[in-house]
Image (cartoon, rainbow over all chains, first blue to last red; front, side, top):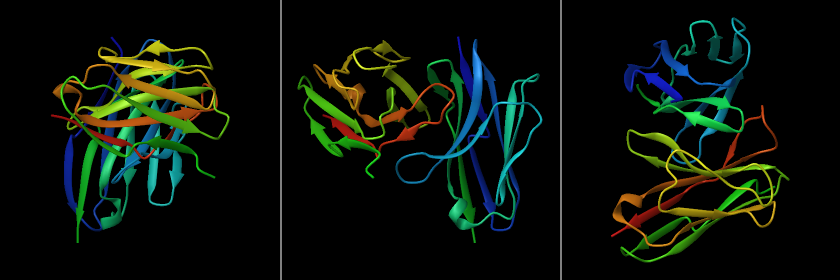
Length: 109
Length: 112
């Protein structure tokens, strides 16, 4: 059965800290791995990763994929209160995306 | 530029009632999806469509039906609502395989 597992489930940090979110997967037809940020409503797209070892970066956020070990990490440096959200990992399995349970990040001043 | 629009945004049903959730996208996307989100469960796929006139079951299809008569619309139906269907429902679409999903703003459904 295809599955996507995220860890930790919840994380509480102070502003300025660096965090690493993890996503591991087991799927039969891997196409790509995607990260989304969900604040109050709809998830918003962060990154799509298709190749191992190539870091994607956007400001303080970065992500990398390891297709041999079947996992990805999302790093956030110098966290801000606006980073507080649920971060979702999803794997594209041919015609559909399979999501993990998400990591809830809370950043306090 | 509306993107993905879901109606209604909120709904309260009594057990046994029926309703239809409408998802509309104006991006000419081929693929459309219905997910539900429950606390601690992430997003679970209910049904999806890879093109007009097609539908397929996801992880949790029981108790739901869907139709994709027009490319831009994807309807999710509950024939006889149950309290276990209390959830937040998200519609999403994408142009093709290998592309990211665009999400609607969600529908909060409560079944009493």
